[in-house]
Length: 502
Image (cartoon, rainbow, N blue to C red; front, side):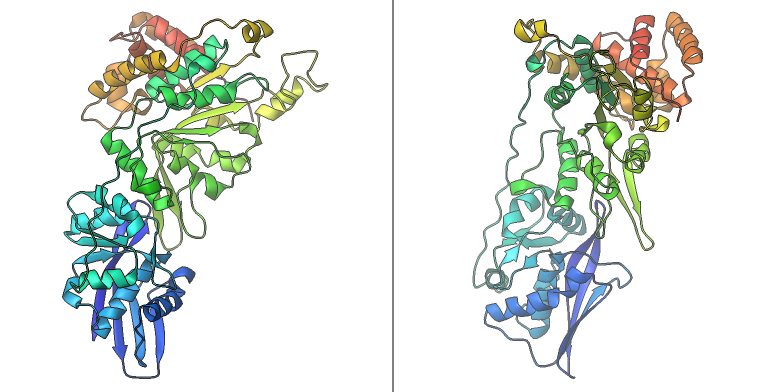
Protein backbone atom coordinates (compact mmCIF):
# COMPACT_ATOMS: atom_id res chain seq x y z
CA UNK A 1 0.00 0.00 0.00
CA UNK A 2 1.17 3.53 -0.78
CA UNK A 3 0.02 6.45 1.37
CA UNK A 4 0.51 10.05 0.30
CA UNK A 5 0.87 13.28 2.30
CA UNK A 6 1.19 16.71 0.70
CA UNK A 7 3.84 19.20 1.78
CA UNK A 8 5.89 21.99 0.19
CA UNK A 9 9.43 22.93 -0.77
CA UNK A 10 10.47 26.57 -0.55
CA UNK A 11 12.07 28.30 -3.52
CA UNK A 12 12.53 31.88 -2.36
CA UNK A 13 9.03 33.14 -1.56
CA UNK A 14 7.41 30.43 -3.64
CA UNK A 15 6.00 27.27 -2.06
CA UNK A 16 6.20 24.34 -4.49
CA UNK A 17 4.00 21.32 -3.88
CA UNK A 18 5.75 18.09 -2.86
CA UNK A 19 4.19 14.64 -2.46
CA UNK A 20 5.47 12.43 0.34
CA UNK A 21 4.82 8.87 -0.83
CA UNK A 22 5.27 6.02 1.63
CA UNK A 23 5.28 2.33 0.78
CA UNK A 24 5.51 -0.58 3.21
CA UNK A 25 6.52 -3.76 1.40
CA UNK A 26 7.85 -7.21 2.30
CA UNK A 27 11.59 -7.50 2.42
CA UNK A 28 14.58 -6.90 4.62
CA UNK A 29 13.48 -4.42 7.36
CA UNK A 30 14.70 -0.93 6.64
CA UNK A 31 13.67 2.71 6.37
CA UNK A 32 14.84 4.60 3.28
CA UNK A 33 14.11 8.19 2.19
CA UNK A 34 14.71 9.06 -1.48
CA UNK A 35 14.00 12.10 -3.67
CA UNK A 36 17.05 14.37 -3.26
CA UNK A 37 16.82 14.89 0.51
CA UNK A 38 19.46 17.03 2.22
CA UNK A 39 21.08 16.07 5.52
CA UNK A 40 18.21 17.42 7.64
CA UNK A 41 15.64 15.43 5.64
CA UNK A 42 17.76 12.27 5.69
CA UNK A 43 17.89 12.54 9.49
CA UNK A 44 14.08 12.66 9.58
CA UNK A 45 14.15 8.86 9.59
CA UNK A 46 15.45 8.75 13.14
CA UNK A 47 13.20 11.55 14.44
CA UNK A 48 10.12 9.93 12.89
CA UNK A 49 11.05 6.52 14.28
CA UNK A 50 11.50 7.93 17.80
CA UNK A 51 8.33 10.09 17.68
CA UNK A 52 6.16 7.14 16.58
CA UNK A 53 7.69 5.01 19.31
CA UNK A 54 6.96 7.78 21.85
CA UNK A 55 3.19 7.53 21.19
CA UNK A 56 3.19 3.77 21.76
CA UNK A 57 3.44 2.50 18.19
CA UNK A 58 6.18 0.51 16.52
CA UNK A 59 7.23 0.33 12.91
CA UNK A 60 6.41 -2.90 11.06
CA UNK A 61 9.37 -5.20 10.42
CA UNK A 62 9.20 -4.57 6.69
CA UNK A 63 10.91 -2.42 4.10
CA UNK A 64 9.70 1.18 4.37
CA UNK A 65 10.40 3.45 1.41
CA UNK A 66 9.58 7.17 1.45
CA UNK A 67 9.78 9.06 -1.84
CA UNK A 68 9.71 12.86 -2.02
CA UNK A 69 8.22 13.74 -5.40
CA UNK A 70 9.18 15.40 -7.72
CA UNK A 71 12.43 13.53 -7.29
CA UNK A 72 14.56 16.09 -9.16
CA UNK A 73 13.67 18.96 -6.80
CA UNK A 74 16.13 19.38 -3.90
CA UNK A 75 14.43 18.99 -0.50
CA UNK A 76 15.85 21.07 2.35
CA UNK A 77 14.71 21.60 5.93
CA UNK A 78 13.25 19.78 8.89
CA UNK A 79 9.60 20.60 8.03
CA UNK A 80 9.37 17.28 6.16
CA UNK A 81 9.34 15.32 9.48
CA UNK A 82 5.62 15.57 10.11
CA UNK A 83 4.44 14.77 6.54
CA UNK A 84 6.79 11.76 6.46
CA UNK A 85 5.40 10.55 9.79
CA UNK A 86 1.77 10.97 8.69
CA UNK A 87 2.40 9.27 5.35
CA UNK A 88 3.99 6.37 7.22
CA UNK A 89 1.08 6.19 9.68
CA UNK A 90 -1.30 6.29 6.70
CA UNK A 91 0.49 3.32 5.14
CA UNK A 92 0.21 1.52 8.50
CA UNK A 93 -3.55 2.19 8.59
CA UNK A 94 -3.38 4.40 11.68
CA UNK A 95 -4.54 7.49 9.76
CA UNK A 96 -7.25 7.54 7.12
CA UNK A 97 -5.57 8.13 3.75
CA UNK A 98 -8.53 10.10 2.36
CA UNK A 99 -8.53 12.46 5.34
CA UNK A 100 -4.77 12.94 5.03
CA UNK A 101 -5.09 13.89 1.34
CA UNK A 102 -7.10 17.00 2.32
CA UNK A 103 -4.18 18.75 4.00
CA UNK A 104 -0.77 20.25 3.35
CA UNK A 105 1.51 19.21 6.20
CA UNK A 106 4.60 20.95 7.63
CA UNK A 107 6.39 20.61 10.94
CA UNK A 108 9.46 19.27 12.72
CA UNK A 109 9.17 16.36 15.12
CA UNK A 110 10.87 15.97 18.47
CA UNK A 111 11.93 12.58 19.78
CA UNK A 112 9.03 12.67 22.26
CA UNK A 113 6.43 13.36 19.57
CA UNK A 114 6.15 17.10 20.05
CA UNK A 115 5.72 19.18 16.90
CA UNK A 116 8.23 22.02 16.73
CA UNK A 117 8.07 25.13 14.59
CA UNK A 118 9.71 25.43 11.19
CA UNK A 119 10.29 28.36 8.82
CA UNK A 120 7.87 29.18 6.01
CA UNK A 121 4.49 28.23 7.54
CA UNK A 122 2.84 31.39 6.18
CA UNK A 123 3.92 30.45 2.64
CA UNK A 124 2.67 26.89 3.14
CA UNK A 125 -0.70 28.24 4.34
CA UNK A 126 -1.02 30.48 1.28
CA UNK A 127 -0.15 27.52 -0.95
CA UNK A 128 -2.77 25.38 0.80
CA UNK A 129 -5.36 28.12 0.37
CA UNK A 130 -4.67 28.37 -3.37
CA UNK A 131 -4.89 24.58 -3.72
CA UNK A 132 -8.17 24.38 -1.79
CA UNK A 133 -6.62 22.28 0.98
CA UNK A 134 -6.28 22.59 4.72
CA UNK A 135 -3.02 22.94 6.64
CA UNK A 136 -1.49 20.89 9.44
CA UNK A 137 1.26 22.81 11.22
CA UNK A 138 2.89 23.26 14.66
CA UNK A 139 0.69 24.76 17.37
CA UNK A 140 3.09 27.65 17.91
CA UNK A 141 2.64 28.73 14.29
CA UNK A 142 -1.11 28.38 14.06
CA UNK A 143 -1.72 32.14 14.40
CA UNK A 144 0.76 32.72 11.58
CA UNK A 145 -1.03 30.26 9.30
CA UNK A 146 -4.41 31.81 10.12
CA UNK A 147 -3.41 34.96 8.19
CA UNK A 148 -3.77 32.99 4.95
CA UNK A 149 -7.53 33.53 5.07
CA UNK A 150 -10.13 30.88 4.22
CA UNK A 151 -8.10 27.78 5.04
CA UNK A 152 -8.69 25.12 7.69
CA UNK A 153 -5.71 25.08 10.02
CA UNK A 154 -4.93 22.25 12.44
CA UNK A 155 -2.24 23.58 14.75
CA UNK A 156 -1.17 20.51 16.68
CA UNK A 157 1.08 20.56 19.76
CA UNK A 158 2.19 16.93 19.38
CA UNK A 159 1.74 13.86 17.22
CA UNK A 160 -0.66 12.05 19.60
CA UNK A 161 -3.05 15.02 19.79
CA UNK A 162 -2.97 15.27 16.01
CA UNK A 163 -3.82 11.61 15.53
CA UNK A 164 -6.70 11.87 18.01
CA UNK A 165 -8.06 14.89 16.15
CA UNK A 166 -7.82 13.22 12.74
CA UNK A 167 -9.44 10.02 14.07
CA UNK A 168 -12.28 11.98 15.72
CA UNK A 169 -11.30 10.90 19.24
CA UNK A 170 -10.02 14.34 20.23
CA UNK A 171 -10.28 17.95 19.20
CA UNK A 172 -7.75 20.67 18.49
CA UNK A 173 -9.34 24.13 18.56
CA UNK A 174 -8.66 26.38 15.56
CA UNK A 175 -5.87 28.90 16.08
CA UNK A 176 -6.71 32.45 17.10
CA UNK A 177 -5.54 35.16 14.73
CA UNK A 178 -2.69 37.08 16.37
CA UNK A 179 -3.07 40.84 16.04
CA UNK A 180 0.05 42.63 14.89
CA UNK A 181 1.69 44.97 17.35
CA UNK A 182 1.34 48.68 16.67
CA UNK A 183 4.44 50.26 15.12
CA UNK A 184 6.85 51.65 17.71
CA UNK A 185 8.86 54.82 17.07
CA UNK A 186 12.21 54.10 18.74
CA UNK A 187 14.21 57.30 18.07
CA UNK A 188 12.66 60.76 17.77
CA UNK A 189 14.24 63.38 15.53
CA UNK A 190 14.01 65.85 18.39
CA UNK A 191 17.06 64.09 19.83
CA UNK A 192 19.18 65.26 16.90
CA UNK A 193 21.10 68.42 17.74
CA UNK A 194 21.75 70.79 14.86
CA UNK A 195 22.40 69.06 11.52
CA UNK A 196 19.73 70.95 9.58
CA UNK A 197 21.09 69.87 6.20
CA UNK A 198 21.22 66.21 7.21
CA UNK A 199 17.73 66.40 8.70
CA UNK A 200 16.43 67.79 5.43
CA UNK A 201 18.12 64.98 3.48
CA UNK A 202 16.58 62.38 5.80
CA UNK A 203 13.13 63.87 5.21
CA UNK A 204 13.56 63.84 1.43
CA UNK A 205 14.85 60.26 1.54
CA UNK A 206 11.85 59.16 3.60
CA UNK A 207 9.34 61.00 1.41
CA UNK A 208 10.53 59.44 -1.85
CA UNK A 209 12.15 56.17 -0.75
CA UNK A 210 15.58 57.34 -1.88
CA UNK A 211 19.00 55.93 -1.03
CA UNK A 212 21.12 58.15 1.20
CA UNK A 213 24.81 58.46 2.05
CA UNK A 214 26.04 60.46 5.05
CA UNK A 215 29.71 61.42 5.27
CA UNK A 216 31.12 62.97 8.40
CA UNK A 217 33.56 62.67 11.31
CA UNK A 218 33.06 60.20 14.17
CA UNK A 219 30.40 61.26 16.67
CA UNK A 220 28.62 63.65 14.31
CA UNK A 221 25.33 61.79 14.69
CA UNK A 222 25.16 59.76 11.47
CA UNK A 223 23.92 56.60 13.17
CA UNK A 224 21.39 58.59 15.21
CA UNK A 225 20.01 60.18 12.06
CA UNK A 226 19.69 56.79 10.38
CA UNK A 227 17.88 55.39 13.42
CA UNK A 228 15.34 58.22 13.13
CA UNK A 229 14.38 57.24 9.58
CA UNK A 230 12.01 54.32 10.38
CA UNK A 231 10.07 56.62 12.71
CA UNK A 232 9.13 59.03 9.94
CA UNK A 233 8.33 56.43 7.28
CA UNK A 234 4.64 55.63 6.70
CA UNK A 235 3.24 52.39 8.11
CA UNK A 236 3.13 49.34 5.88
CA UNK A 237 -0.07 48.85 3.93
CA UNK A 238 -1.82 45.47 4.44
CA UNK A 239 -0.37 44.18 1.15
CA UNK A 240 3.12 45.37 2.09
CA UNK A 241 2.80 43.85 5.57
CA UNK A 242 2.04 40.48 3.98
CA UNK A 243 5.10 40.77 1.70
CA UNK A 244 7.41 41.61 4.61
CA UNK A 245 5.87 38.87 6.78
CA UNK A 246 6.42 36.26 4.08
CA UNK A 247 10.14 37.06 4.02
CA UNK A 248 10.25 36.90 7.83
CA UNK A 249 8.37 33.58 7.76
CA UNK A 250 10.89 31.99 5.37
CA UNK A 251 13.74 33.32 7.53
CA UNK A 252 12.06 31.98 10.69
CA UNK A 253 11.90 35.40 12.35
CA UNK A 254 8.13 35.95 12.42
CA UNK A 255 7.47 36.18 16.16
CA UNK A 256 4.26 34.87 17.67
CA UNK A 257 2.55 34.51 14.32
CA UNK A 258 2.01 38.28 14.12
CA UNK A 259 2.23 40.11 10.83
CA UNK A 260 4.96 42.73 10.64
CA UNK A 261 3.54 46.26 10.67
CA UNK A 262 6.68 48.31 11.18
CA UNK A 263 9.06 48.80 8.29
CA UNK A 264 12.17 46.66 8.80
CA UNK A 265 15.42 48.32 9.86
CA UNK A 266 18.45 46.10 9.34
CA UNK A 267 21.96 47.14 10.32
CA UNK A 268 24.48 44.37 9.56
CA UNK A 269 28.05 44.58 10.84
CA UNK A 270 30.72 45.44 8.29
CA UNK A 271 32.18 41.93 8.65
CA UNK A 272 29.05 40.45 7.00
CA UNK A 273 29.71 37.96 4.20
CA UNK A 274 28.13 38.09 0.76
CA UNK A 275 25.55 35.33 1.52
CA UNK A 276 24.68 37.11 4.77
CA UNK A 277 24.05 40.38 2.95
CA UNK A 278 22.35 39.28 -0.28
CA UNK A 279 21.26 35.73 0.55
CA UNK A 280 22.41 32.22 -0.25
CA UNK A 281 24.39 29.77 1.82
CA UNK A 282 24.29 25.98 2.02
CA UNK A 283 20.53 26.17 2.51
CA UNK A 284 19.40 29.23 0.60
CA UNK A 285 18.04 31.83 3.00
CA UNK A 286 17.20 35.52 2.50
CA UNK A 287 20.02 37.93 3.30
CA UNK A 288 19.91 41.27 5.04
CA UNK A 289 18.87 43.09 1.86
CA UNK A 290 15.75 40.89 1.65
CA UNK A 291 15.04 40.99 5.38
CA UNK A 292 14.96 44.78 4.95
CA UNK A 293 12.43 44.54 2.08
CA UNK A 294 10.19 47.65 2.04
CA UNK A 295 12.26 49.05 4.87
CA UNK A 296 15.74 50.40 5.57
CA UNK A 297 19.11 48.71 5.11
CA UNK A 298 21.66 50.71 7.12
CA UNK A 299 25.33 50.12 6.36
CA UNK A 300 27.48 51.92 8.91
CA UNK A 301 31.21 52.33 8.19
CA UNK A 302 30.51 51.70 4.51
CA UNK A 303 34.15 51.46 3.27
CA UNK A 304 34.91 48.81 5.92
CA UNK A 305 32.66 46.30 4.13
CA UNK A 306 34.48 44.04 1.69
CA UNK A 307 34.29 45.57 -1.75
CA UNK A 308 32.86 42.44 -3.47
CA UNK A 309 30.16 42.33 -0.79
CA UNK A 310 29.19 45.95 -1.43
CA UNK A 311 29.23 45.48 -5.18
CA UNK A 312 26.82 42.56 -4.82
CA UNK A 313 24.21 45.17 -3.84
CA UNK A 314 24.30 46.87 -7.25
CA UNK A 315 21.70 44.64 -8.92
CA UNK A 316 19.26 44.48 -5.97
CA UNK A 317 19.31 48.28 -5.63
CA UNK A 318 18.46 48.61 -9.32
CA UNK A 319 15.92 45.78 -9.75
CA UNK A 320 14.45 45.32 -6.27
CA UNK A 321 15.06 41.55 -6.30
CA UNK A 322 17.90 39.16 -5.45
CA UNK A 323 18.46 36.08 -7.61
CA UNK A 324 20.59 33.36 -6.03
CA UNK A 325 21.73 31.10 -8.86
CA UNK A 326 22.73 27.51 -8.31
CA UNK A 327 23.52 24.73 -10.73
CA UNK A 328 20.20 23.00 -10.01
CA UNK A 329 17.93 25.90 -9.02
CA UNK A 330 17.43 29.66 -9.11
CA UNK A 331 15.93 31.24 -6.01
CA UNK A 332 14.56 34.79 -6.02
CA UNK A 333 13.86 36.99 -3.00
CA UNK A 334 12.37 40.49 -2.97
CA UNK A 335 14.80 43.29 -2.06
CA UNK A 336 13.07 46.62 -2.54
CA UNK A 337 15.05 48.46 0.11
CA UNK A 338 16.02 51.98 1.00
CA UNK A 339 19.80 51.99 1.42
CA UNK A 340 21.15 54.35 4.06
CA UNK A 341 24.93 54.37 4.46
CA UNK A 342 27.33 56.24 6.70
CA UNK A 343 31.07 56.68 6.46
CA UNK A 344 33.94 58.75 7.74
CA UNK A 345 35.67 61.00 5.20
CA UNK A 346 38.95 59.15 5.75
CA UNK A 347 40.37 56.39 7.93
CA UNK A 348 41.14 58.68 10.86
CA UNK A 349 37.83 60.47 10.36
CA UNK A 350 39.12 64.03 10.84
CA UNK A 351 39.88 65.13 7.30
CA UNK A 352 38.40 68.61 7.77
CA UNK A 353 40.20 69.33 11.06
CA UNK A 354 43.86 70.19 10.54
CA UNK A 355 44.57 69.71 14.26
CA UNK A 356 43.30 66.13 14.29
CA UNK A 357 43.86 64.93 10.72
CA UNK A 358 46.58 62.39 10.07
CA UNK A 359 49.80 63.19 8.19
CA UNK A 360 48.57 61.50 5.01
CA UNK A 361 45.65 63.88 4.45
CA UNK A 362 44.20 64.44 1.91
CA UNK A 363 45.62 61.37 0.16
CA UNK A 364 44.22 59.09 2.86
CA UNK A 365 40.70 60.36 2.09
CA UNK A 366 41.00 59.54 -1.61
CA UNK A 367 42.31 56.04 -0.84
CA UNK A 368 39.66 55.42 1.80
CA UNK A 369 36.68 56.63 -0.21
CA UNK A 370 37.88 54.73 -3.28
CA UNK A 371 37.07 51.51 -1.42
CA UNK A 372 33.45 52.17 -2.41
CA UNK A 373 33.03 51.67 -6.14
CA UNK A 374 31.76 54.41 -8.41
CA UNK A 375 28.89 52.29 -9.80
CA UNK A 376 27.57 51.75 -6.27
CA UNK A 377 27.82 55.46 -5.43
CA UNK A 378 26.00 56.23 -8.68
CA UNK A 379 23.01 54.32 -7.28
CA UNK A 380 22.80 56.59 -4.23
CA UNK A 381 20.33 59.42 -4.75
CA UNK A 382 21.32 61.71 -1.89
CA UNK A 383 24.72 62.41 -0.40
CA UNK A 384 25.16 64.83 2.48
CA UNK A 385 28.10 66.07 4.54
CA UNK A 386 27.39 65.72 8.27
CA UNK A 387 29.44 68.25 10.20
CA UNK A 388 30.65 67.71 13.75
CA UNK A 389 28.18 68.96 16.34
CA UNK A 390 29.39 72.17 17.93
CA UNK A 391 29.73 72.65 21.67
CA UNK A 392 27.08 75.37 21.51
CA UNK A 393 24.55 72.95 20.02
CA UNK A 394 25.28 70.47 22.79
CA UNK A 395 25.19 72.92 25.72
CA UNK A 396 22.36 75.17 24.54
CA UNK A 397 20.57 73.24 21.81
CA UNK A 398 17.97 75.04 19.77
CA UNK A 399 14.52 73.42 19.78
CA UNK A 400 14.36 70.87 16.99
CA UNK A 401 11.35 69.45 15.23
CA UNK A 402 10.17 66.04 16.37
CA UNK A 403 9.41 62.98 14.28
CA UNK A 404 5.62 63.50 14.40
CA UNK A 405 5.75 66.74 12.43
CA UNK A 406 8.25 65.36 9.92
CA UNK A 407 6.26 62.14 9.53
CA UNK A 408 3.13 64.15 8.71
CA UNK A 409 4.90 65.88 5.80
CA UNK A 410 6.35 62.58 4.63
CA UNK A 411 2.92 60.93 4.75
CA UNK A 412 1.41 63.76 2.70
CA UNK A 413 4.16 63.41 0.07
CA UNK A 414 3.73 59.63 -0.03
CA UNK A 415 -0.05 60.07 -0.45
CA UNK A 416 0.58 62.19 -3.55
CA UNK A 417 2.83 59.47 -4.94
CA UNK A 418 0.30 56.73 -4.20
CA UNK A 419 -2.37 58.64 -6.12
CA UNK A 420 0.04 59.50 -8.94
CA UNK A 421 1.27 55.95 -9.56
CA UNK A 422 -2.02 54.14 -8.89
CA UNK A 423 -2.28 51.22 -11.27
CA UNK A 424 1.41 51.37 -12.22
CA UNK A 425 4.45 49.43 -11.05
CA UNK A 426 6.00 52.24 -9.01
CA UNK A 427 5.03 52.87 -5.38
CA UNK A 428 7.34 55.82 -4.74
CA UNK A 429 9.30 58.38 -6.73
CA UNK A 430 12.45 56.29 -6.21
CA UNK A 431 10.85 53.47 -8.23
CA UNK A 432 9.44 55.65 -11.04
CA UNK A 433 10.99 55.02 -14.43
CA UNK A 434 10.32 55.38 -18.14
CA UNK A 435 7.04 57.05 -19.12
CA UNK A 436 5.95 57.40 -15.48
CA UNK A 437 9.02 59.49 -14.71
CA UNK A 438 8.77 61.50 -17.92
CA UNK A 439 5.10 62.28 -17.36
CA UNK A 440 5.45 63.43 -13.76
CA UNK A 441 9.05 64.59 -13.20
CA UNK A 442 9.93 66.53 -16.35
CA UNK A 443 10.89 70.01 -15.08
CA UNK A 444 9.75 73.35 -16.46
CA UNK A 445 11.94 75.21 -18.96
CA UNK A 446 14.20 76.96 -16.39
CA UNK A 447 14.58 73.62 -14.61
CA UNK A 448 15.46 71.86 -17.86
CA UNK A 449 18.11 74.44 -18.65
CA UNK A 450 19.70 74.11 -15.21
CA UNK A 451 19.62 70.31 -15.34
CA UNK A 452 21.19 70.22 -18.80
CA UNK A 453 23.95 72.58 -17.72
CA UNK A 454 24.62 70.65 -14.51
CA UNK A 455 24.56 67.26 -16.26
CA UNK A 456 27.32 68.39 -18.57
CA UNK A 457 29.39 70.08 -15.85
CA UNK A 458 29.03 67.21 -13.36
CA UNK A 459 29.27 64.56 -16.09
CA UNK A 460 26.19 62.80 -14.83
CA UNK A 461 25.54 59.28 -16.08
CA UNK A 462 22.11 58.41 -17.46
CA UNK A 463 21.38 56.77 -14.10
CA UNK A 464 22.53 59.87 -12.23
CA UNK A 465 20.39 62.09 -14.43
CA UNK A 466 17.34 59.93 -13.73
CA UNK A 467 17.96 59.91 -10.01
CA UNK A 468 18.24 63.70 -9.91
CA UNK A 469 14.81 63.88 -11.54
CA UNK A 470 13.38 61.46 -8.97
CA UNK A 471 14.77 63.45 -6.05
CA UNK A 472 13.50 66.72 -7.56
CA UNK A 473 10.04 65.19 -7.91
CA UNK A 474 10.10 64.28 -4.22
CA UNK A 475 11.23 67.77 -3.21
CA UNK A 476 8.33 69.18 -5.24
CA UNK A 477 5.94 66.77 -3.49
CA UNK A 478 7.14 67.95 -0.07
CA UNK A 479 6.52 71.53 -1.22
CA UNK A 480 3.06 70.62 -2.50
CA UNK A 481 3.96 71.55 -6.06
CA UNK A 482 2.42 69.73 -9.02
CA UNK A 483 5.32 70.68 -11.29
CA UNK A 484 9.08 70.31 -10.91
CA UNK A 485 10.72 73.72 -11.01
CA UNK A 486 14.22 75.14 -11.14
CA UNK A 487 14.42 75.41 -7.34
CA UNK A 488 13.62 71.71 -6.94
CA UNK A 489 16.24 70.72 -9.53
CA UNK A 490 18.82 72.96 -7.83
CA UNK A 491 18.28 71.33 -4.43
CA UNK A 492 18.35 67.83 -5.93
CA UNK A 493 21.66 68.60 -7.65
CA UNK A 494 23.14 69.82 -4.37
CA UNK A 495 22.79 66.29 -2.99
CA UNK A 496 24.43 64.61 -5.98
CA UNK A 497 27.85 63.18 -5.17
CA UNK A 498 30.61 62.83 -7.72
CA UNK A 499 31.84 59.26 -7.84
CA UNK A 500 35.58 58.82 -7.19
CA UNK A 501 37.79 57.66 -10.03
CA UNK A 502 38.75 54.06 -9.23
